[in-house]
Amino acid sequence: MNNKTLRTALLIFVGLVLISCAFGGGLAAGRYLPVSQQPVNMEVSNPDTPVTVSTPAGAEDATPSDLQTLFEPFWEVWSIVHQQYVDQPVDDLLLMRGAIRGMVDALGDQHSGYLDPQQYEDATTDLTGEYEGIGAWVDTTGEYLTIVTPMSGSPAEAAGLRPGDMIIAVDGDDMTGVVPEVARQKVLGPAGTDVVLTIRREGVDEPFDVTVTRAHITVPSVESEMLDNRIAYIKINTFGDNTTSELKKALRELLDQEPVGMIVDLRYNGGGWLSTSVEVASQFIGEGVILYEQYGDGRRDTYEAIPGGMATDIPLVVLVNEGTASASEIVAGAIQDYERGKLVGVTTYGKGSVQNFQPLSDGAGGLRITIAKWLTPKERHIHEVGLTPDYIVEITEDDVANDLDPQLDKAIQVLQEMIAGGTD
Image (cartoon, rainbow, N blue to C red; front, side, top):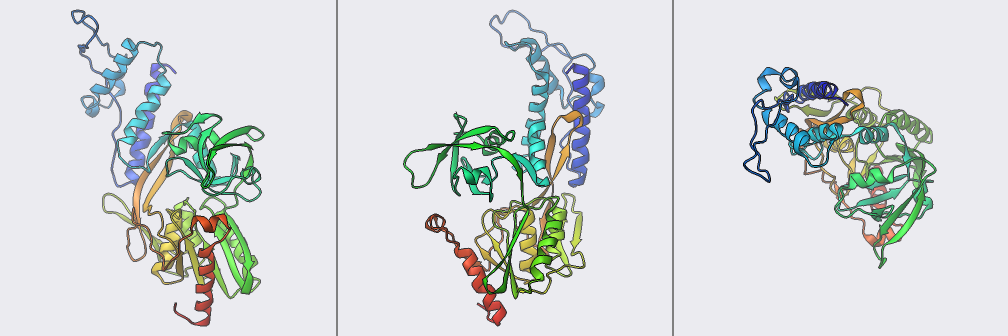
């Protein structure tokens, strides 16, 4: 990429950032970067030898006039790196991506970040319901990438991976100190290829290797079945492009069997599209506000229930846990505020902010940027607090090892008491 093309790409990127920030209440992160026009004295091996840093051609014209002074240091560094760094030539594309990443990281928001082209594709593909990998729900919030649960019929399940397995190496590369999201990217790969995962498992003395053959994975965003005693069970795994249509199909099939009550399982659902969360909540809440979206300048958008929900009257219990986040908390929070149903499990993750995925020009990747905070219908702000269930039920390691689910058991009990007219 030549300097002219690079400057053009950077200017386009900054314009897109400003557009995204406008949606976030006018909080702009800056535009573009000028170059110093003065020589810069550097500490060198011979201090008597002056070092001159030249300005990249056209840099001043490419920088908005009101930002030239602010961004002089950036262009100084850009020139110093190109003129003095020991290993030349440097990679301009990597420098550009590093500058973008540093600018977004400076916001101090764990939910905003720059994604390179492959990361952006992987992040947005997950919400379409298809990707290539091992087929497992994972937790990226801990020290290591950790298996939450293998998907039914997946390569991860066939290889014997279990909930709680920590991936401490991928293809022999130690993941200690590596951001779990980066480890997740390494696990992904073309269908038919093998990946060797080094696993640390509770109760097993030494780490061990598991070879998993990747496959094309179609993620079911909604799973459903009829439990005993005519109780309908729906598990929503994500809030993606196909979730609403899959949910409606599942509801039709279950309601045709005339269930007496329903359990909606939102455990380990990390969220997805805000619009999908409103559509999902509207299947269970007949009318009223689903959430408020609060911007930095005080503006507020109100999202109302969409008329025509299919399950607005049936007795309802919602399962939640520490992995219930974002869009799934929107649904659970609205159900709790309206006392539409009871929440069972443990306190949710507490992600009360809204992000946009903003693609950058020329396939340069994309930006995940926080644009607003959201509140429940009763104007509760749950960010870093979470939702407290009506019934607190923990799952122990022994429960997992023995394939027990006390949270589901409690949900069934609560639902049966609701149906019978009990209160606790």
